[in-house]
Length: 61
Image (cartoon, rainbow, N blue to C red; front, side, top):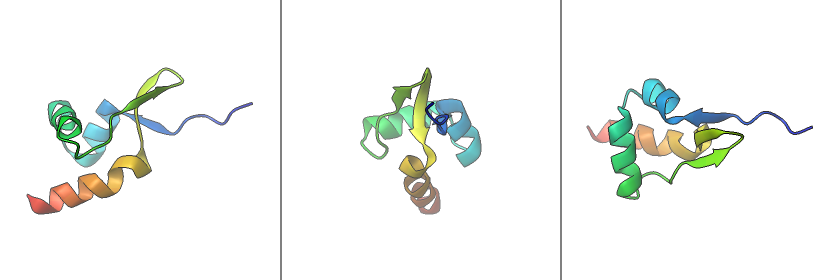
């Protein structure tokens, strides 16, 4: 049996990193974040895919 996917949805990432979903979409469009992917019915990212990039972006503000 496959292990459960530890994928964070757009909303979970938004709450965890205090960024709105529209901004996440814009960051994906600019190539600052990878495109979210579907797996097991969830659209989003594994945290390691976005954590470093979002922290770096937050420090620029």
